[in-house]
Image: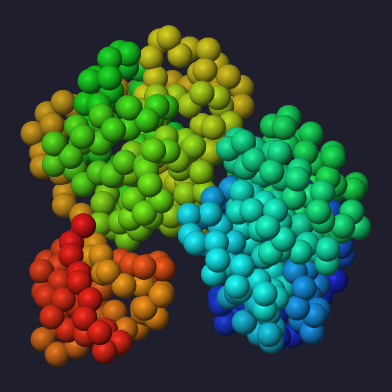
Length: 462
């Protein structure tokens, strides 16, 4: 039988089906095929699926289908662990709702001013997507009313619990009607998830389509090394030289290891960036933008800082050490090999970590066999430069800048080719644009000497 969206027994409206086709959604992914019939019929659902499996469309279609757009009350709440993920989810649901008139979707996250969010809420919203901390803030200040919520979604629930949001989630749920549908999605299913599910869900349907990490999805390689940080650093460099990834994430267990490894990689000529919990929100935004747009090839991160990291096409994941537990290892390597692509994961471990290896073998149901590292002669190579360079512009949404304004300014008379312009990200007070490295100087001059929206803005390379 075809896995077409039009074959769903509970049914999606013709408008939604047509919009899905225009977006390139023709066949349902496994998580969509197994969960959507239950979601559309109003049942509570627990879905275990990796990021990139299509779960956002699964619950997003459910939310859109049950809305009464004539009523401007919050009818659905989606909780996400990080601002980045919440923004991505809100954007995805907006695309899915294009054929449904008058749907208002708001993103409520920390790291951005509170007052504009409160002002938007005064005009009502149908779906709110947010982080637990900021949702709590709005509830405390009575700028958000959840009395009309019909569906609650806990997205990447395991990550929210890992980040210490359990109390916040419970406080929020107390302010939502008990007669509701609850959808919980998680990449892993630790005991803490069982505990939350049993307290907030009614007879949930459990769906497990978490992809097994085998050779068809992620190619895993393990290297037994000395405990020395310098030896591990050399091993990371050898792996980067041998595989020349355009995007690689290296996981460390501690912030100080992240800082030191980035410094050593940069000194060796790699375009590497650090992502850890001490970064200011502005610096975090800048780092994620630069890595996502191809201006840096290596991102070195801690587990907590990388929560919600959802960047397409990560070629390689390298574990500087084994993660603290097997579930975290699955999270890490799940960032490569997505959307049907073959991913590669390289893990360094020492003999002192044999107990972690044993736990990992049990979870993955396979035997870990250490391999030989690439030859040390590779160290004489020069790392490949990043293909793109990021410009920062000192204007953003508050100045009503749009991607089209920036693209037009860059490609106007005596400008750069449109093919040299990459991703554009616009924040409240600034914007970032990726341009081919060979065009960066010209691009800076075009922005700085020209006008956007009739105004002058500064631009510089970061």
